[in-house]
Image 1 (cartoon, rainbow, N blue to C red):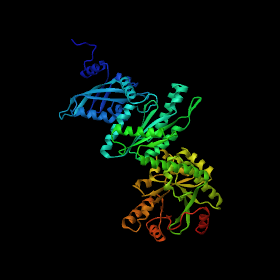
Image 2: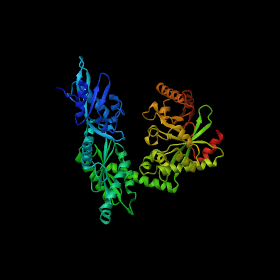
Image 3: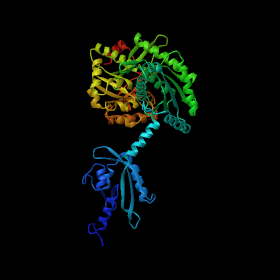
Image 4: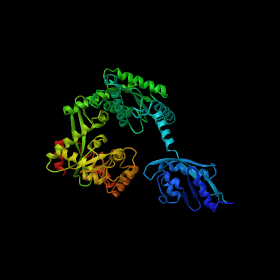
Length: 561
């Protein structure tokens, strides 16, 4: 005889049976798009009945975005019959905003005559504790607990992976072996607690100084390493120089200040090896050479030729530092003229170095060295100060444009107000920044590089040397631009069918975006006429006027204003 206290409806009996299961339960009527959630399931996430709509979409919306694709894939595998049971682990957002890991299991209990699923039931099991435990185990197995950097095991695994990839695509790679100088005296004198603080700070500086795709690791003690996929000798040298400077900055550990630096050995793949042991051995030998070079905070290449070139650049960097002190830098003005009238519209600021032995040097011969040595901000400030001095001397204002590096622009600050204050202090209320495409799209500058912010700071923005390398026409639609400067390489093709077609196309597209078009490197007046016909509105180049010093430009400007 049936129990009168039990519901007699089979559907109600089914739901009661589901509720009696220890796990939280869901019941999805696929054909109608309705999904019922048990009270236990809702309570697991802190929700009450009515908080979540009875649809699969409502629960899916609470699933972590990173987990949705795999969840859908696992569902489809069960729906199609590939998997007998639906099983998936994913994160669900709770009512308080936290995330809970769950294991969901389900089974289609009804299908149509065509085999398509009509109804599916299943459970949610809270596996957050297990997932956190697994994450903690993985973290301990792969990361150094003191610095948070990758440990020796994970570094070795990544090195093997990158070397296998090199064998496939032949991309270069650099390995930096790093050892702290004077760490042992600090550790011995002040104790392991202070030594640990120092190592943790080294880890932070390392992580902040390498590229996003690089891996920094602590191999043990005061030994560190950096793996740099895709890096050639030039990139490795620049990063090593920045690291040696950053790691030599004073360490303030509570009331103490520790005078610690780092020596760095550089090995390159494939030059110095294509196997883990050979590459690590080469980096260690280069590190040994750096340690025993008689000074601290040095880096050394394993390859003698590259080391010789690095030493030459170090010598040049020392000379460049002295050049700033001795007043050997020179400012030149390159006029930008109206393509129709020849009237001076603005001037580009150009840098020259009056080297005592090699004569006047243009930036390509020393800018890489200046960047690696961290001198670009000081050089850029000198250039702007000198331009402001001439601006104050002239009776009327003139638009000036200048190329500045990312390091200097970031040092200006992170708001339009910071930039405006910088220009105000310099005495340059209006300035055009000439940026090439990579810098135009620099993520660290994107919040500033749009017209309202720039105008508030008294700046305009030019896309410089467009077409010099692989270029994207989409860059012309960047919201911060006011003009585009066509690269001399492209300008030199004027007169050829393909060159004319490219110049005309870019000019028309630029004007459609309300951008002024300036042609650089114009070789002679006749070329200027052709460029004007192709859409250039302004011209500059040695065929029209040479770059001049302040007095020479002032006299020329008087005649062409």
